[in-house]
Image 1: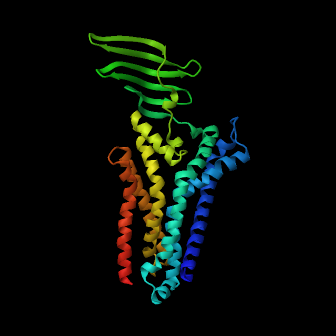
Image 2 (image 1 turned 45 degrees about the horizontal axis):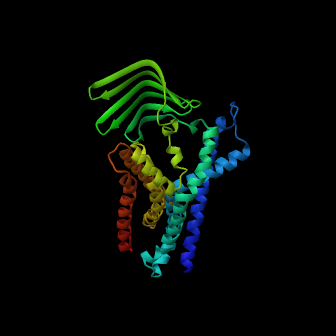
Image 3 (image 1 turned 135 degrees about the vertical axis):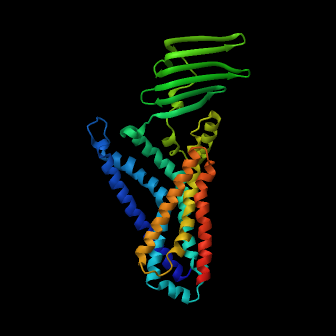
Length: 362
């Protein structure tokens, strides 16, 4: 490895680690200020200082580092590469006969090493740390448990349940409907304005209920103000799992997605996006690195500030594009795979064109 390669790799890693550390320090300060009342408020159950540091913030840092590392690789490369251009170091490098694509080698090597580390973190290490963080949030933070809305699940073969919303802390659901199908079609249907679950008896209480039983000779209708009965499911079928999937390592998450597809829940799109992002986000590190180099390798009148401003604009555009495509996936317009990968594909195509154009201009 040449001295030039070692020089670029050293300032690449140093700038990236420094910028990411500063970001994480800011995020921790703002998060602590926002949750200060929940941490040490008037409620009885408050975390100790040791729990706050070891169970929450030690596991909070890897989550945000994995989420924003590729963007800060991009900003770091734009910043230090612009400084090389402004100090005429790039002029000396290319004037010495080094080709542009040879010049890219230390950038690609460093970005590849960061990508491999992020892939391991995203698929295995971060889910494990998220498990400890989510347990802390469920125990001490009010956002730990949330109401689940628009539930539609297959809870047993041929048995489908719908609820407008369900509150896990209270085991309370609204606008309940259960349909049981057989080979001949709809066999019976339950409807209730509200339902509650008694964890001691394992029974569901239906309030203002209607029960239809369909037979060959017609249907039997039973209704009343309240009925206690047993169904083949418990409240954990309806608890919000968006946080829980963050705690699953990728092999376990794949198995979970297969189970959720069989249950018919529309939330499976969220789980598929979570799994795909564990690969797409780390791989975007290489795309962002190769995009940052040609963007910041020319001396401009605005100097490094202009390059960094341009880099931030590109980063925000990527985030905007990512949010748009994911919203399309949630609304059923795009398949989750394409919603996650299209921003990377578009930016990769632009990166290739920009690098070829820049190399031809040298």
